[in-house]
Length: 187
Image (cartoon, rainbow, N blue to C red; front, side):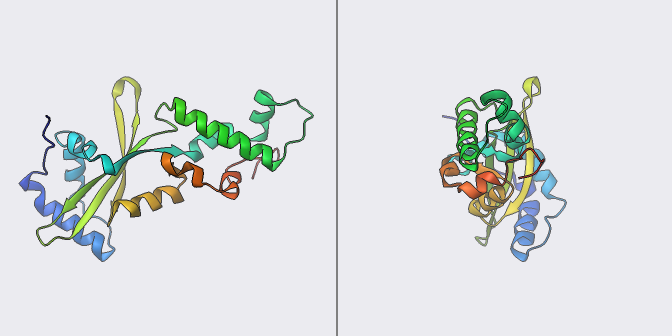
């Protein structure tokens, strides 16, 4: 059994300042970087250790950049003169998302994590990030910020087009189409 590392006492002051700023709606203090550094090294198992705060997301804007457009659709799937309907676009996007989930390499399907912190008085916050592979260089952590809850982090991700895999079926057709680029270059 592996023990999950605990935030070292020398980082408690930074932790407390991060929580305070989060609850006051202020930018995180510079000392947040100290916690980031710890999480990327000695605290890696703590960052990845809480299964409830880790999931995979579909980076829809990244996938859309090269695959959600009329030209790609025609080149790979249709004849040049075939008329493309929104219904066809929606079905194609949903198929591409499903394929990305099944074959995800981490670029379109990164992991997300949040690390819970709590002060002595019971106030809490979560430090959040995405993690994507960088080949031989290992994973790359992109810090997203500090939120009051993991659910707040998930809402922010969804606004940016990073949708948890288990919520992908909740995307409406309108949401799917907003990422599609027609022959004219826009959705």
